[in-house]
Image 1 (tube, rainbow, N blue to C red):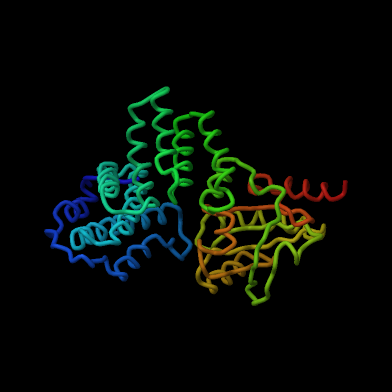
Image 2: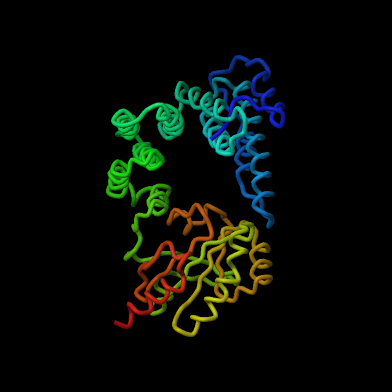
Length: 354
């Protein structure tokens, strides 16, 4: 995730982090103001306009630097704030993003934020975020049984707390990163057994790591079309094979793949196949313009809640486009159909005719 001392391009940020105003004594009821938190959180909202991946990456990089600058100021001004952990978890995310881009000094900065978070008065759900950063750093010097034990310790450290599932999830990710296949599968099995039905973030992780946790289960959604009509799945489309497309107008890969998706739609629309788009945009006009420009002639739905769209949240959607196929019985046949959409549609059609 992120860095400590920024060079040339980041020197101003480094200065603000290292030389912030002297901390002022905090009142017992001191808190980081709500508008400050709101402004910091807004930096994580994806750009609403279509742009190249390089442009988007640069904008996000600049925003994450802003998050660290604002977070450092909040730490200086409210060092004993009861909600300071809310700022630090955002700083961890921002620093992690920058560290992932190998920004100079970012990793050191990330570790410093993580250490302050663990020492501070933060709930387990926040401390686990810091713990996985520091655990990941320790793993760099370990191997064999010691490495495996360090990962297991993280998974157990938050047992019987609200962060228990997150700790196991982070341990599974670290096991995968260090090619500990057996340990990874063990931890994923624990996640699936204990937490898959209670935490959308965990269900999303399980999907991304290849666990077919949705296949064979009903695809459930309460959707609203661009025309205001309600659509309830699976009830309203039972008897049809349904392709679910999670997308957004600001997503370059969505725009790139749209012509191919349109081509598949034309081939199968008269075979009892229904396409349903679920937009993760926040502005309805952006959805309407995108649909019109790219001639997407199938049902499009929109909640205006972005990544917090209820159906996207239910199914742990964290990357788009994401294509699902649902059989005529309303049950999921594929939760990762993007690479082989026509093949997955045909499988669903064939399954109904046997």
